[in-house]
Amino acid sequence: MRTASILALLALLLLAFPARAEVIERLPTTGKVVALTFDACEAKGAPAHFDRAILDYLEAEKLPFTVFATGLFAQHNRDDLARLAKLPEAEIENHSFDHPQHTERLDLDRALAEVKGGDDAIEAATGRRPVFFRFPAGNYDAATLAAVEGSGHRVVHWRWPSGDPAKGLTPEHLRDWVVAKTRPGDILIFHVNGRAPATHAALPQVVAELRRRGYSFVRLDEVLK
Image (cartoon, rainbow, N blue to C red; front, side, top):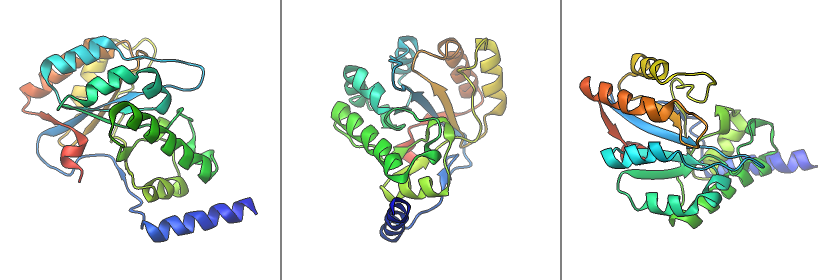
């Protein structure tokens, strides 16, 4: 009976909001434009906070950037998110409530509760309800994608990962990898939750080299309409 109810709910969502079945992995441009995005992950039992060096650099350079925050992270970093939301360069979006690694294994009602919980916590901190969603660990299936799109969100991932949380990763390796892989329209993904120690040292070098190559930076909501 529960399975039938869930399938009926999904059918209603598909009728109300025809799914694009689209995970956005790059910007719709051939120009030398990229988006800097930062996951602010937090799961149950593991409080996390902003890497201050990354935020200080982004703000000093007035770089456009997008943070995908979980609801728990938003609750534990409410003042910082409220301040960031007032910056014209910053955008705060949804990365679930408590970062389940496999959203596709959840019942659809639980998956939608993850989306709503993230929305609610971010809106409480920033006054703005997210319009973009990023699946934790990038894991999803057709049903969860349709459900998230049906809830009014567009799903934004990446074409390739920076891998910045990897243990033992040096700033030099991260810099060289990101610069070598970047192409026009890429959505770059890093982490800003204090668990990617190479990022704050590599990021200024990455930005400087991409600028030297003619790239500029945008928020997602400036180009994804």
